[in-house]
Length: 250
Ligand SMILES: [Zn+2]
Image (cartoon, rainbow, N blue to C red; front, top):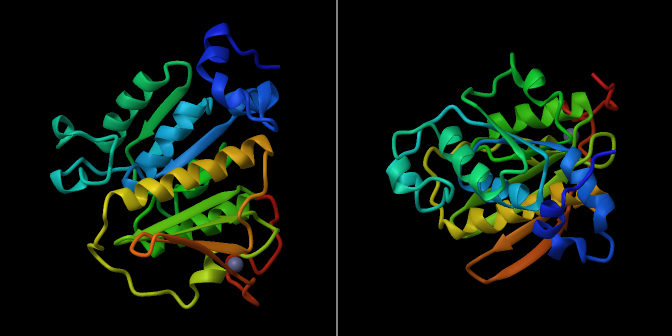
């Protein structure tokens, strides 16, 4: 059984006080591996809180370098990081925030050839991608391997969130079919992926610890203009190309 050091018990003191959480949940976090696919606005926000909460292994995947126009929302990257690989910049900050966890950064694009090997050891996969194509690929791979997939996306001051549990409820493809048109440079107020990335972290932490109920079969919609949250039901698409058949394990 994994042990928690004195320092860890102190670091996580406030979350250990949550009724349904406790040391047992904290040990589960320490043993867990979360893949954060993309270290942009969503990924930065989610990774910060996953690291702070004590997820034992974080794998960050992103092949891009930091650009000045990223800094309004990608909060792990600072002005001095412009030109550096995003995974290097993020790894540096997360390791400083929490030296008791392991963070690895993979400078690669996620594609049909490598997606399975990238996520095969994950307990949860967090969506920090910026295209329908990449999300659909991850969604499909997660279903094939039976991995929980936490999806979020943003546009302007709008955000959406859903959790896909293979074999239980609808998947991301059920929701986005037919595939919408990609927007090359969508507008984003930085705080929007901040909010949605935090919510992804909440879902991932719940899935690992078994605390609470994940957002399955529903889409949470955040509207920053009206400052409202609402959920809409999502149904499983008949004959969905991704989840139409039950998860086969591999
Ligand atoms: Zn589906």
